[in-house]
Image (cartoon, rainbow, N blue to C red):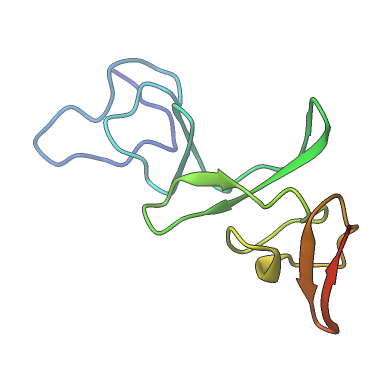
Length: 101
């Protein structure tokens, strides 16, 4: 069976159960929900605006903090990769901490 290119080859074992990226036994790179992907999605349209994701230590794509509006490298506001707009609560950036009261 021909497996998706994002499936990690399993020596001596089945690599996939079908042709899609959601049918891999293990992922070669990252996993976003049920799908193996080469990189985490950036800028997907969600219910309340764009959604950015980062790869966690288990190589699964996780959503960035809601105040990270340009992407992130981790779960907190300190992990935002670009200037972010303040949505609610407190935000910590290069110039200090600001809070919406």
